[in-house]
Image (tube, rainbow, N blue to C red):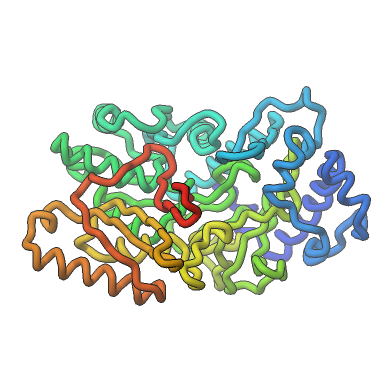
Length: 436
């Protein structure tokens, strides 16, 4: 059983005391690394943090710090104690590598088990894990968590969609872990195979994460599959998935504050923001052995949700991630996040399941264009109906973004898809094709 009531419903004052104790132990452990040993010796912070708010005096850690210290600059234990390495995605320069001891892996599995239990997963379920295994943390994290719960786990990984559906049907899977973009892509194969997931399968829960997605995408997946879909948040620098998770109330993601100390900062000034204000999430590990991280800038934009959750858990909730401070698009001086475009498009019933954003320069001005798939019945409609839908999409995007994009409607399943993380944005302004 992974309902840790004493921890998950702990009084906030007691939880703060636990965090302070673990924070000081984590800082002591971090100083054993070359990076923090040098940093802490050159700063004026005391060896012991007396109040949690004093953590704000310690400098941030960034992804560039991890890359510059590659490979072992953040390692805080002897290399012989390390049993696992994971690496975050990236295409240029040194990767960000993250090390784990056996205890780190065990705690990670316990956290994922806690997350899954929180949404109602139990020993009688059958779990089909469609996430990637390997250096990517998503697949292995949920795999270990499910096994700790005693759930039969199918480590099928991503891709081979018709085989996925065969396993879902034959093994009577009840729970899946899947990229939101792939969940929408997979549905087209259900249609091709004349399988109705609501009628022919036994699914009841899906976990989605690993790529930004809007509430509209979540609702579309719930509608198509007839299941409950829960948001997961994590990043390989912390452990992978398991940092924060939705409960059955689906009203924000509980940050597991007994293992992570969260802050929301102004991404421009670094100032810590009060609850309710949107900013960048900063995380400090409280229980990591191999590679503690102190005030790590995730670049993910969110806010702490005010009030108590009806589920009774006292760990603070963050709002869904609305984008990253480093994936903001500036179109003729206007700041735009790709997820704003997704949210707007997916709220239009006639719009299909895939879209693509392109940015060009024309006469020294930025031009934003969006290609979007439409539903099959709409595609078979009249030219006047298509023109009306196109105008509707342009108007909705103009209202949301403050700029007027061009919108091209395309037939269903005509845009490129990936069985990994979706690539939605192509910026041609530098003269070369670049994806974000």
